[in-house]
Image (cartoon, rainbow, N blue to C red; front, top):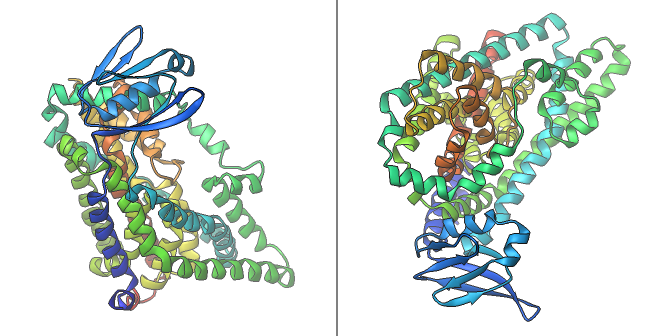
Length: 497
């Protein structure tokens, strides 16, 4: 079959397109809900479609129309377990009591999502052992502690500078386009009501930025627990320290340990090749589920905000990283992006820098010619502290929410956004959706109402997919620059790209 003769990258792109079409065809019906209730001590479920009136009968009655599916679900979730026992629901004169849940009715596009979840879990499964093994071997092979410090210093410095650039790009675009001033009042009210419950849960999550606490938390009490909890910064710290310690061990005792971790690293890379064989199916399932559940309609509501974020990500990814490669490396920008295609499609479909890390390492080593010693240090570190896409989105989102509320953020407040977003991005977990939690820190810093995150929750998943591309592309671009500066950049090999 022609599909199996295509290059893997093309298979993944085709799966992405077909998944989006499949999700659009088998999308969740916005005028259909499933009510689960207990009647005569028997649990039953009933699907209600195209209702005229949907009323919660309680101390404060709430009435909804046929277009209010999300509002109905959110309203039910806002009741406590005790309140749910007391309320009754009237749907077009049909009374429901002892209601246990009100949910969207899933379609086949949602039911196949576990295939995509398995794909993400497989990639995440090998990320930790790959990072640990690669970093230990990389640090041990560098031999010279001064060289390790030099590479580490350059890597972290560039990551911080590019993050500051990203936030600045986001702030400039948000001030020029002013997406928040283009939102009608009725749209604002609808979004706040629809996502109020979800926003409240996120706001209640305790998050804070304390530089000294971040530094202290770099050191793991228990490396095994750090690996179990996927604390990437702690794993990086332990692995580098262990690799450095190996350089002081007698050669005959050092070599078996290095050989073991080198063999483990090679095994994990080979495992990446095997897992990538199911990548088209995983990508198809993930995209189909995302489009099937969220659709494209929400983008129309937040079109100016979404376009501002996407434009900012495009400018930063193509022009900032492209300019950096032109200035500090001999690699052609076109060659770089061609070599990164596979990692970028995986990043888009999984929304996770951690899950994409093994693929990113493979692309950098095999396609771009970055040495294993450099990738094993810069990429795991970048997956943890270099979140340019997330930082850019936080800058746009903070200004957008402020504009919706009629607040004017001056130069001091916007500089505070830059500083806070840079600090927040360091240590941000490389998993889907965490950016919205870190945004709360930024909003607190400039005194913008935190409940404003309800305005952007509807498109967060789709924009998360886009900003993850920027995150992992930035990691790779820095790896190329560092490899060039250390004389460890081979000629690119794009035969498998």
